[in-house]
Each structure stands twice: as C-alpha cells, then as structure tokens.
Amino acid sequence: MIETLPDARGHFGPYGGMFVPETLMSALDELTAEYERAKNDPAFRSELDELLRNFAGRPTPLYLAERLLKDLGGAKIYLKREDLLHTGAHKINNALGQILLARRMGKKRIIAETGAGQHGVATATVAARFGCECIIYMGSVDMERQSLNVARMRFLGAKVVAVTAGQATLKEAINEAMRDWVTNVRTTHYILGSALGSHPYPMMVRDFHRVIGIEARRQILEREERLPDLLVACVGGGSNAIGLFHPFLNDESVKMIGVEAGGEGIRTGKHAARFQGGRLGVLQGTKTFLLANDDGQIELTHSVSAGLDYAAVGPEHSYLRDAGRIEYDYATDDEALAAFRTLAETEGIIPALETAHAIAHVIKIAPAMPPDKLIIINCSGRGDKDAGHFGI
Ligand SMILES: *Cc1c(COP(=O)(O)O)cnc(C)c1O
View 1 (cartoon, protein in one colour):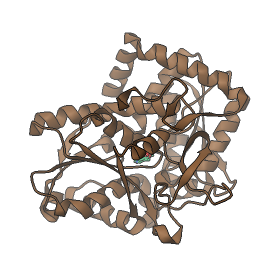
View 2 (cartoon, rainbow, N blue to C red):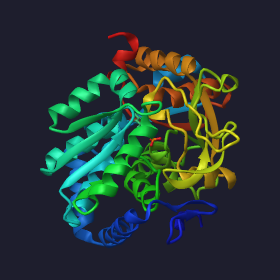
View 3 (cartoon, rainbow, N blue to C red):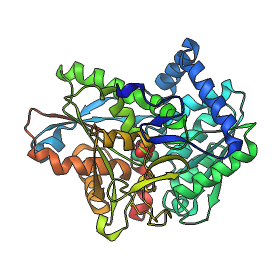
C-alpha cells in the first residue's frame, strides 16, 4: 500500500532519507517524535481543525468552471479553490500544522525560506498569530519579482533577510535557513514550506496538505456521485500536488498529472522540469530527481513563477513517478501566461503563475477528452502577488 510510506527513516523506495549535518539530526529526531505524538493526540487534531476552519477558511469550495468548459469543450473541469484560503494559497495548511508543533516543542523562534513569498507570508502570519519571532530567508531576485509579498511579511512583523548568493532564488534561501537552524537549533523551529528536504518534512508537509484531497473527494462524491477521472496540479517541491493526490492514490480509476515548469522550453535548458532530463542526486537533505550536470553540480533553473523555480522535486513524487502512479508533464512560461489570462477572463479568477501551469496543461488536454470525464485542478493560489510580472 502506497499510503504507508515513507519508512521510519523517511525512505520512499530509493528516494528521501535524512542527508543533513550531524548537528541537525537530534532536532529532526525530536521533530519526528513530536509529530508522531501530535498526530495521535485528539487535542492537537481539534486545535488544528479549528484553526483551519475559522482562521484559514476551510473547507475551500470545489467550483465547476463552466465558462472555461464551454470555451474548451471536452471534459468537465472543477477547481479546488485553495486560492480562497487566508494568505492566498495552500501554504497556510502546513504553516498552521507546524506552528502548533513548534509550540509543543517550546520553540518560540521561527525561521523559513520562501520562493514566491507565499510560504513566507503564511509563516509570518502564523508566527504573528502565536506571538513568535519570525525570520524569513528570501533570494534577492525573488524579493524583486514578489515585492508585494515582501511588504506583507513586514506588515506581519517578520524580518525578511535578502539572500544574494548564487542564483539568489529558492535554493540559496533554503541554504541560509539551514545555516541559521544549525546555529540556533535549540530555540528555533524551521517551518519548511514544501514536501521537500530531510525526513520528516516530506511526510509531515504532505500530511498537513492531505486535507485538500480529503475535502475534494467528499465534495466530488456529493456533486457527481462518483470519483474524478483526472487530478491535475502544478509541482514545485510538490506539496499542493501531493496534498490533492494522496487521498486518491489507492483509487485505481483516478489518473493524476503533475505539471512542472517548462520555462523557455526543455531544449533551451532554461526550465525547472526535473522529470525532463533530471537525474538522481542529493540536495538539501533528500535524495530525489534534480537538475544537475555530469559533475553533479546543480544546474541553474528558470521559471516565470518563483514558486516552481527549484532544482529538486519532493522525494515522494520521484517514487510515485517510478511506480507509474503519477504522470508528469510541463507547461512553458508562455503557456502559463496565456492560461493565467484565460482563467481570469473566463472565470473571474486570477490564478497564481504557479497554478497557471496546471491550468495550461488542462487547456491542452481537456478538449480531446469525452464530456463525461471529470477533472479536478488544484487552484493552489491567487495571482495578486504576480502583478509585478506585468509591470504593475
Ligand atoms: C509555493 C506555491 C506552489 C509550489 O509549491 P508546491 O510545494 O509544489 O505546491 C504552487 N502554487 C502556489 C500558489 C504556491 O504558492
């Protein structure tokens, strides 16, 4: 059964694990143990459920995209509206779960990395809500293209630290956060923002996002009295995708497609599609598919969306791809930008540029599917943060 993964040391088949400096091992073991206790503690569950409902705004609607459907023809398209959550993306599901764990461990200093800024905003939000000090590491390139989110984090009382090393995007921000954690591990909890990194993060982050798929399953059964035929989500580290997909993994009739960032096209090398020419390697705590050259050096990545612009993919995705359970495809920058406009103009929903990759893929395939087929797209976030891309 796929649902019993990972094993006790975080392995999803040959992927995952704990590739971290010795100084972090005890913190990761403490976190794993606390998570196991919390998971089985009804008080933890009910406090998290209460916050998800009344602070974050769950359950999110499952919305039938009727005008998009009319334009495209073909399969029936539903959107799981994670963009309607407090702070504007799915990230808050995980941030809330982890801040409760930090409190249980008596850690009052919170650090996080952020790419598009959505995870930084979610973390700054829960830190404010629980009265914790909060430091967010962010690449200087991302700070520029996501300046609205930088302002939001500062309003929330977080300190945003610009990371200028290397490509100055998400990978370098994670390096800085790990460095901070090694130094301050006794007082500090690191709220990692995707299903990435060392065990227990890929498992724990997945579990906090499973609520997306659990709700979607109940909602589609209510609406259509059957399971969907296809689930589609964009894949950066892979947290919104695994959150939607995981509760359906044992339903054989449900197909799943993860959409990576094709950037300027796979042949140009300017992309972040790890399953298109990526290889097995270790990056930032985990063994997984990543973009590296023959010497094992991590390649530069490119995507119009900061949230998908990362060289590695979550280890469970590598496993599920090998197992043939999830298919992975990609959408280019241009396709995502076109899909962004299409959804805004047909449905009155402005998606995040990350989300627009999933929409773009459905725009490609839905017209050729029979009208009795049901697709659910994870609408992972809203697009206000991307105004800067359009010179606004
Ligand atoms: C962060 C983000 C993503 C990418 O991260 P995953 O962990 O792959 O989900 C996708 N969409 C939005 C809106 C985001 O903020």
